Amino acid sequence: MPYPVTLIPGDGIGPEVASAARRAVDASGVSIEWEISELNAELILKTGQSLPQSVVDSLDRTRVGLKGPVATPIGGGFASVNVALRKRLDLYANVRPVHSLPGIASRFSDVTIDMVIFRENTEDLYSGIEHEVIPDVVTGIKVITRTASIRIAEYAFKFADQLGRKKVTAIHKANIMKLADGLFLRCCREVAARFPHIHYNELIVDNASMQLVMRPETFDILLLPNLYGDIVSDLAAGLVGGLGIVPGANMGDTHAVFEAVHGSAPDIAGKGIANPTAMMLSAVLMLTHLKELEAARRLQSAVEKVYASKKHTTGDVGGHASTEEFTDAVIAAMS
Ligand code: ATP
Image 1 (cartoon, helix red, strand yellow):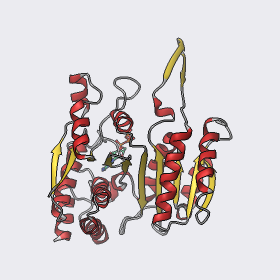
Image 2: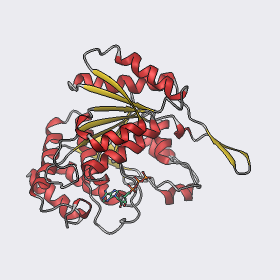
Image 3: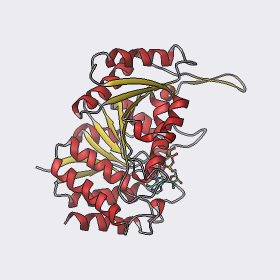
Image 4: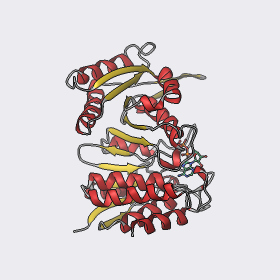
């Protein structure tokens, strides 16, 4: 029986990298019944619905999605559809493995970077509660709850426990946001106490940012509230070669949606040069979630082979290949 999966091509480079990832997954030996679901800025503006019901219906049927980026207008316009989807399906854990790939010459090529970021996905300043008190005075509300903080901390520690990871670092700004980040930290400590064999430490987000650049190899599992998780994810992507290669998973108790860390990259959309690695590695996470471990391993090692040979990589990581050439090379490496 093929697995039903909702494929959301999205905006900008989304359709290009989604189609590349679909080709690669189909070549990995697994049988997927793709249910294509349109979700992009044009459709949202046309229908006036920030999260069309058809997308939610499809994900309710399949329970698993592979999603391209959907653009969010800056400073006005409609609310982020990515945030809306995560909240609507209660995809509370955003998981982003950040690993060095072979053959990529980054400033950090001489160290092995192998960290996994766990970002709380449903609250914090992403609650979207903003208020203009009087003209030119605006407040934005940061929401931190015990329920959400315990849930993401448990998710991170259970993952660390299952995979034999050694250390969890909680990242915060509780010296300034004493109540909000203070609550987040108390929850992390409470969960950490249940896993005494895993080393637990805490870093203030500004210090964590510096340590990540100076000593990235010392990080293992990172546990963060939503906003710091967003920013630190891009920083971490920069350590291993950029946004083109870092995958992600949005996990809930009933649904899972896999998507790259990068956005819609309008500057390169439609040119056929986007790097589909992040989307392909998100598909590897999806295959692992579906327990198709052999297909996941084949796709992961094909991507690594293409990087190691340095021949068919895209411009963002120093190569010259198009999206299609890279995809062809990954598929060839699997056969
Ligand atoms: P968002 O605000 O939607 O999260 P972002 O700030 O992460 O977006 P992106 O749209 O991801 O921004 O793009 C940031 C930069 O990285 C751009 O210059 C873009 O071209 C580059 N980039 C992002 N993804 C890729 C990719 N898959 N391949 C090549 N370059 C990429």
